[in-house]
Image 1 (cartoon, rainbow over the protein chains, first blue to last red):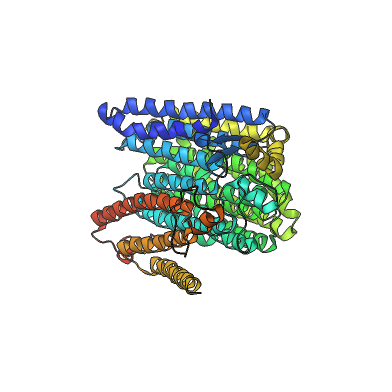
Image 2 (cartoon, rainbow over the protein chains, first blue to last red; image 1 turned 60 degrees about the vertical axis):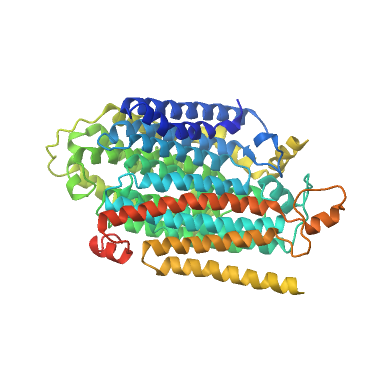
Length: 507
Length: 129
């Protein structure tokens, strides 16, 4: 099996889902089985990829149509991408299982799964790609699926408003990235990541192109426009405005995958550019940008969490808060920072999915997202409430649970820069803890509503699985960091190996 | 001399168009006008990328290498096809985005009877902030 096939699996299944569903008379059972087969196949293939990258010493390269590096498009997967991809495919599988019963009463289940699979293909492609232009295409694949799936409840004005806002902001963001690619191509004459890195570090590369103009100026424009893209795509402070509306309108499983995986694509691409490709780019001003905007985002997210009246908006601002942490840490520029970002991406995705799923179960039962109508709902569902408690404790950063360890790494990475920055993590966590505590009190106290809605086993079991993972990842965190995440950062920081892997293919 | 002035003139115009697009996107409250402004901005960017690959010489060669031309002359005169490939991809993607956004604008109209963002904020009681 070739690694270039992995994003093709969900994409191919997604393409054929609407006609196949139409021909079989849109039977729910058929659509569900089809989608679950696709999601499981993708998860299994990413397990294979994970095993393969960790057993190989160099990054794996796949050239499309055997067109070698600077001429054709390549996929380049190292351990950093592989461990995030494993989390992504696992999360999408969980979201697929969860949506089976969550979307009981909605029409258009076949389109929901089409866009979910398309979203998965885009996210995996963005993490695998070794070509800056291909990253733009993958961002648009993610965008097209995400704008469509956010407006899934198309008769609710909230959903349409959120989707339109997200759509138009996202389209501007990707256009700016396209302009950034123009600057990059005009100066370096290539958009292949390994080739760019070779040009930047003065390493010879086949089919070399001479650098035109002042590469430092072109890179400055490139980074400015790429950061502008990331500000919108990853919801960092001036570009965060679309996120609460989009999440409020979107179905819960969509919110879970968006928060865990779609948002981190922007951060990941920035990280790839700064830590691997243009490693050593003089970055004092860049770092300052990351620190200021990241801490502003963290404060904004945590403070806004405490004043919301809608439970989905609380989680949306919590996502903004965590994106702020990640963005801040990108600025530190050390290997420890890379380790912290990588581990936090995985941990945050799992804990945030658990939070979304348990809150989704409450919403499923009460049929409302207003905080007032959720009062006392937790009384009748002790298991879900316990899992909800675990998710909130984990996201706040309570020791034996998983997010604590990644937050500690972020704290360490920022402490090397300045104690003031490190204290931002502590203060915003404390504010967020107050918001979660308030939410928990509302859900636990008050009279339990007389709703007789049965909670489906698929929803409880996925939440339970994620809850167990939160605890296990927390308990084994030191071990996991040593075995999996530390080698991943070592490989990601080694730009020579990154270039060599592509050069070897050219022969 | 004339060529470099021409390049400068076009570049400045295109940047002005891109900035105008962003300005319109932010200030207009009509959703259809927002989509139009997005397209103006996108087309400005596309033109700029085409300009990167273009050669201001006469005659311009097609980007297919032939034996009777020296390699240096080919490099100086052949138009770079890669930015055109980029723009082709971006144009196709842009069309898909347009269809999606316009379908949302239509759905807006069905739900509210208007495509003006100010009216919608009023209908939702300022809650949509």
